[in-house]
Structure formats: structure tokens, C-alpha cells
Amino acid sequence: MSSGNQSLKKCHALLPTAGTGSRLGGELPKQFQELAGKPMLAYALDAFLQSPHIESIWIGVSPAFIDNPILKTFNSSAKPIHFLPTGGPTRQETVRNTLAALLKNGIAADDWVLVHDAARPGITPALIEKLILAVQASDIGGLLAMRLADTLKQADLDSVIAGNIPHVEKTIPREHLWQAQTPQMFGLAKLHSALENAIRLEADVTDEASAMELSGVKPFLIEGATRNFKVTHPADWELMQLLLRTSAK
Image 1: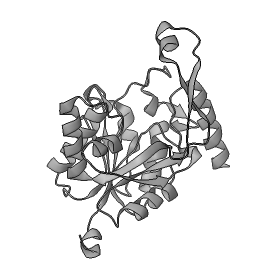
Image 2: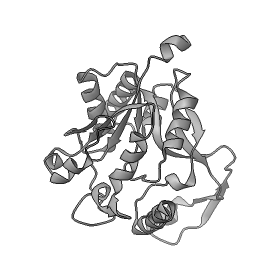
Image 3: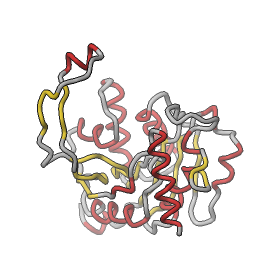
């Protein structure tokens, strides 16, 4: 594909937000809970709104949540934000459903889609642009990721199964290991097809890249940033709150 055709491909953001965030508790799903002064989702939205290459933003929510008044607080005149009742029982189904909605709404099949976890509020416009600029010249796709810094130990399976204190089975070399982050950027129709196939096969895919890998693609790894960690546990919430408040000063 020529660079001229590549330049015509637009970029769109997709945020799956149908999860309940049960490990954090609270009345609202974690992505809508207030973090350092505003809903956690707002930080990722702001980053994509400030990214010049992003044309539109699509957010898949649970059908039961689509009428919640909080969604009306995320309006923007900068670029379109679409909330869709495309949430499914799993993350990959939510992404698959939302991708199908993009296609149905006339988004070009070969446009780029950047799928991002709303639970990564540390994302920045600079990181988004770094990924886009590194990937858009290819027809492959890629993701933000971090080289592993810690020594990895594999536990003995018998102790884990028995519920005992595990022993070290072996140390795993980390030279070629990376920790996946988001956004993960792929062609719209290709990613939709890859996720359809993974779901049909009941494959253990935990992110978009692993679905693409299942279809034979080898995505690019673009170095991300430590601040782009995923907020999962209460300790993560406290750390992210400190980071965001410090960044705002």
C-alpha cells in the first residue's frame, strides 16, 4: 500500500467501558467514579480530544447503563463522542460489538482504531501521537508496551493448586518480555474479523493484539510510559490519584 493511500486513513478511539470494576467497589463502575476531581473516564477522553490525529471517539457501555445521566456530562465541541449500548459479557465482545457499530455507522473499513482501557487514565496526547506516528506508515498495527524491569519467577504449580505457599520453579529470562498497555492500534475491519474469529474459537485473548496474533499478525511494540498503568486495585487508585494531582500542579 502506498504512502499516499496510508495518509487517507483516519484514526478513531474506542474505549470499552462495560465492566463493573467490582474489585474497587463503589456504586458506579470504576471508570465513572471520581478520581482526583473528575470521573476516571474523563482523563482518557481528554487525551484523545487533544490528539490531532483522532477524528472521533466511540465508547461501548453496558446497555443497562446507556441512559445514566453521567454520560451527558462528557459532551465536547472539539470532536464527536459517541456512547453506544454495545457492552458485552467480556471485554473482547464489547470491543467486537463496538467495532461492528463503527462499520455500521459508515467508518471506513481500513481506518485505524485505537482501543484504550478507560482504567488507564495516565495516558497522554504525546503517547497517543507516538503510537500513531510509529504505526500508521505500516499496514500491521501495534501497541504501547513497557519492557519488563523486574525479575520474573515461575511458581511450582502443585503448591498453587493446593493453596500452599508456592516455591520458585524457575527464573524466567526477561530480555525479550514486554508488558502490554493500551492504546492498541489496528485496522477497523481487520481487528473486527480477528476478534470474531477469536470469540468463535473461544480462544484466550486478553487484548486486541493477542486476537491479531491469533490471525497471524505480529504487531509493533511501541514503548509506552510507567504512568500509563492500569487502575485495578485500591492501591492502584491511590497511586494514580497522587500522580494526577501532582501532574495538575
